[in-house]
Image (cartoon, rainbow, N blue to C red; front, top):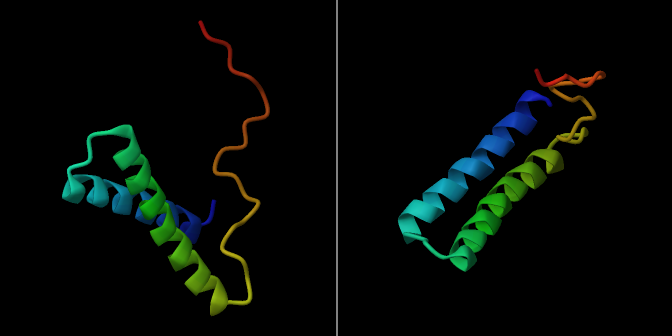
Amino acid sequence: MDDIELILTMLGEASTTKFTKDRDSKTFSNLKTDANDGGHVAKVARTEIESKSPKSVISSKNYLNIKTKRSIN
């Protein structure tokens, strides 16, 4: 995950949290709307960045590349 991907993820999460607090959402339906709206904020930011850059924001890099399973002791 590149820096921009991480930042956009954080933007979506922070926006969702703000919407939930500002709207005082309690029900699943309202929380789902908040999550969709927060994701939309991140999508708009991503689209704007990609419209001004020749490269995609999304990368194939993984922060963690776990090749072996960990055993639980």
